[in-house]
Image 1 (cartoon, one colour):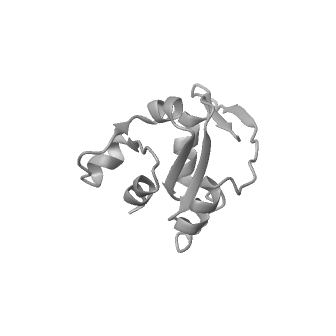
Image 2 (tube, rainbow, N blue to C red; image 1 turned 60 degrees about the horizontal axis):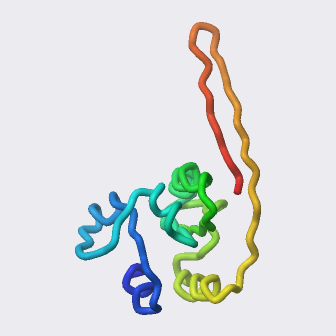
Length: 124
C-alpha cells in the first residue's frame, strides 16, 4: 500500500478523510483536500483524469505540487503508470522530475431560458 511505503521511507503522510474512511484506515493522519494543500509539499492523486481534475480544483489555490497515479482508462492528466508507480514516485521524491505550470481557464455558457453556468479550470 502506498501509505505504508511512504511512511517506511520517512515521509509524513496525510490521507484525505473520505479515502481513509472508504479504505477503513485506522491510526492515520487525515485531512481535507484544503488542509492537505496547506500542509503538504506534494499531493499524490490515485485515480483517473476525473479524480485528478477534482483534486486539482481544490489544490490549485495552494502552493503544492500534484502528481497522479493512473487508475483510469486514459490517463492524460495522471503521470505515473500503476505498474511502475512506486519506482516512479521514488524518483520524483528524490528530485528527478520536471515541473509543469498550467494555466487557469474560466468560462460560462447560457441556454436561452436558463441562467448561465460558470465553469472554471486551472491548468497548473
